[in-house]
Image: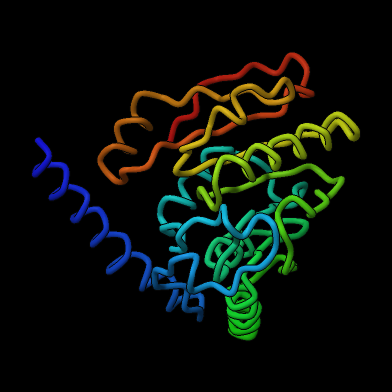
Length: 236
């Protein structure tokens, strides 16, 4: 059983990292490849110790999760916590979001993300403004517009918990439509206990496709300030 899982994971990695992602990055004019340990990332500050290993979100997974929201992107700001080299920023900015914002603690990754966004914009790939903040996630102030928040398990539970609290406080202070996409949702309990967010159930087909295409658990949440809007299962 363990061997079968290892083979399946290796196949998934090859499909994403060596096939889909390379082509996606080439089309966007960026390079977000590579894996880096926290020790390689020029991290500073009290929360540097909680940083996770860097590797970019697989492009197919992000597009699929974002598509599942079925929203009018033009009404939303998308925020990527732990944006790394900026693949998610570029993929999001292909759509007409009000704005796309990235938050990155690593000075090195921030510099690479800024460079990647410049290349993508020069190549005509971006339709939305992009801002990349060199900032601790716990110091970031969320925009007041409707939100899509994205995380790919960028840091440990200590920071995830504070980010979840910040999202909750922001929604209380300024009620608005909001979604949280949490890929590789290792610390999902930080969002499960929120009284401003509720998980959107995902269809059996979505869960099956998750298992076929990735080893990572996924969770999508919706702001509860939406009143009596029915929460239907997300289907692809």
